[in-house]
Amino acid sequence: MRLDELKAMLNITVPNCAEMDLQVSRKSLIDTFPIDPASIEINHLSTRHPSLRYQQMSQTLLYEQSVYKDWLASPTSSLLYLTGITSPEACIKRPTTYSWLSPAAIYVAEQQSASEKSDDLCVYYNCHPSLSPDANVRHGSLELLGSIIWSVLRWKPAVLRHRWQHVKQGIEKAKSLRAEGDIRQSVKSMINLLKDVLIEAQKRTDNGFAYFVLDRLDQIDIKLRYLMDELAHIVAVRDCKVKMFVVVDPAYAQGEWDLDMLDSEFRDRVLHQANWDQTRLPTYERIWNNAKKLGMDNGVDVADTKE
Image (tube, rainbow, N blue to C red; front, side, top):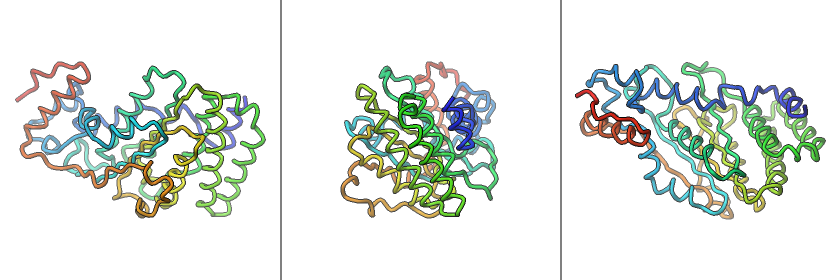
């Protein structure tokens, strides 16, 4: 019941919301980018379609990146920050503001959700679930952080039973700051609450990690550096065991995040794949080789892909 009360306080509909629905996001991305050789959209494309001339995000491409391997293998908390620009011509459906990096968030969330480590938590959140969002409306940072906090408390509900007043007061403070127009302090308040909840939750785990896969934080209602600075502080907390995977399209962000300005105490825990822009392939036929690799990854036979 308290989880329901928490949802009402935060005005969120987790977990039954588009932002946290992996399958909805996966389908939207498959409909937008030629990343799944078994999809109807890719099989109906002419081999001269512009989207086939561009690099697309596959599991193989992501998993072979050294920065991803380092993030995944790290025994401590860490944050992997992916940024890059999407080419408009690389999309099946145009115009769109989707990012070519977003499928990477899907792959990570699916992999961690299917992990055999039963005491791990994986939270997926997509700030850009709609194909055609209102360009004048930013996604609420309070809703984003509230959904993460709610997910942690559902993971370890004993924390909510023992710290209910603390959680309630923390949310009320953040909402009050937000109502006063101080979004930055509201975010800081919610991040502090998230740290407290994580520490308490992980006292009740057997070395379980919390994975936060956060797609398109460029859509948020606060300057990017304010939010990212606060999220980065979480990986520096000694008693928090958390790995964050963040995707940002700098073309839509409010400002930039300068990693060189981070405190030295946790700078080595933040990994960055910078300027990973979508590039044109030497010849458009190469996309079919990538599709064959992706097909083998997914158990799909694409040997008869049209020439």
